[in-house]
Length: 220
Image (cartoon, rainbow, N blue to C red; front, side, top):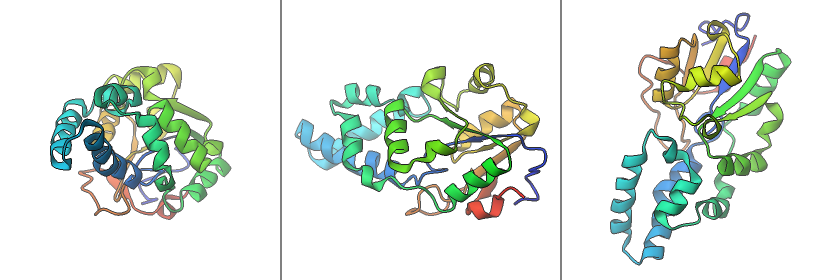
């Protein structure tokens, strides 16, 4: 994998959070298991009915900034989403070798920028639980930019607030739509994640190079 990454050329590293640095199992459990139970109890319906309603809402919001917005889902579902996330926050977990990878990049003098769709409330909770914020030169939230990372206009907007040279930039993200958007913009180095959820199977990564263990892509 390091044959693909020219660490001498790479100056800036953009990193996704959920499914990349953190195990996606927390988010999958939260939205696919915990929220349906809470929604069913709140609205006095059986779990099958609740699941059907939620899947319809999820489908409508997918790929939009609303999909990642705690406030949107609180209003939409009549649930305190931020509080519910705190209730299962013990499931938030850093993926193996992430801290070592981040430290190696710091030692190599790379600019390390977290670029996430996670809502500020979710980001705050996850940084509090993991302490990963100490490794970043900057953390950028798509809610501040006003576009989800999947949106073709996101990277141009990001460039206005975080100037970067596409030819010397690496993006690591588990979302293939985000990688495709970044590829279309011209970011040269792109890595997908083979197993974003540690308790699920490996995923298809299309034509993108993919990483399973961060030990395989440590800076030289």
